[in-house]
Figure (tube, rainbow, N blue to C red):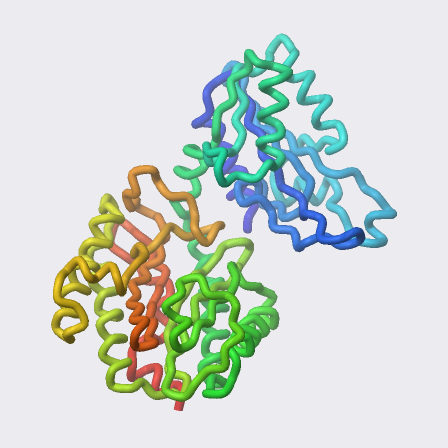
Length: 412
């Protein structure tokens, strides 16, 4: 991605900061797995959005004092011993070229220099750190550690969360971001087509996952989340990732999966017949779910409430399930459809959501109705990724086939 994208993002963030403030963003660090191994590193998505850098143990500062904005990036010093074991660190010039940040400092000096900043004559009144504003689910990470340190050492400094600013900025996708999501969707499409051609009864769910993830690896991508491949009765479990079951003849497999492109995610769900042919009952349920997706997309537009879209789907499901004698009362829909219609998508699979859950122009959303009939061993979900524009929805994943006829013809 062009460095001007990240320069503009920092500029937009600074414009929304209060004056006499400093914002801190950490790249994060891979947690330790064992004495000589670390888990795979995943960069803090806010840090990436503002810098374009996908490397650990860095810190971004954005300062706004008396209306003037400055920025600096703290990066690890070059360590030849480290590089012999783990890989090449970024040099100053490379960091400048990727991010557009000119002031590069030594990461080892961050806390000392930050303390001096908070003690100086032009010290900030506020420090922005990223927090979901909850103690329940957030880990004790760099952000919370810094917040506790500030409270103890500089109680006069206000701590503000950058959540609302980042939610607003990241929610409105640019053309460049849309292209990254479309690339991730393209990887998903190609990998799914390989899966469909190689799907058959007797295969294990984990083998299907391996087929998908191998195809991503061939394209220089990787899963955007843990691949779900639930066959038969396991498909009524929304986040089933055990994937140990053998796929039976005449059963369906629900595949909820995605890919990454430059840290931007796709999130697609398709449901396929193991033997390439839907049974009559499976086809009836599948087409109800597919039409529910159309109902949702017709209801989605800038300014719409997620709740209203979901209620329209539930109303459609209620009418349809009564028609096939599965339910008698509208309230029974909750037995067979027990999740929301979708969520924002972007650098995170579940991207930042507005507090009022209103769909905004240039948001990207998933649209994913499903029906889960435990007593029949049928679970069906169909999920696409849509871009909300002023002229209506654009289905970014429309090329991934999903009608009964298209699926059966492809799997022949």
